[in-house]
Length: 205
Image (cartoon, rainbow, N blue to C red; front, side, top):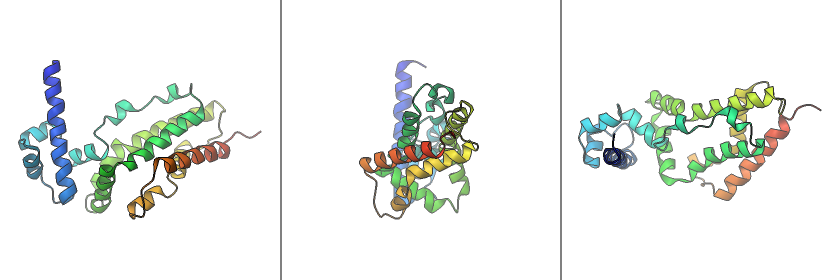
């Protein structure tokens, strides 16, 4: 594919996503059809299916920030060269900073409203986003345990515990429209989570 056609492809993809975002936010997931998205985006249904095989996959692309999550994830072995505090801070911050974006919050609320009726939607979002990140984090924690830098007998559980420490009520307050986190609040909670986690899993003397 030459540079011109690549640019056209990226532009068309963004056009579809823009139309889809408007329709999903206005009508929710269940009441938004591919026909509505096509009309809002100014493209044909066939064009949409060339980029996104289903409405579910299109919605997931919006929720996950339209990124290739697997391609952007770090390699656990490569992370061993950096200080533990830095690696954990990066994981925690990236997880929470998406909550600062209004569009992502609105899409997340749509997921919560629709997931009981469409459980496959939540499963798809989990498998293409959070589960991949948690897998890398668990693998990294396994390597820290094997190297004797931390004592982590159950890395998968520890990975979930770390992210829960970073959250510390932020997602609950957001879901209930109590308040959105500031960057300072996120920084404080992640820093505290990192300290607690490292101290909690420190090797025995």
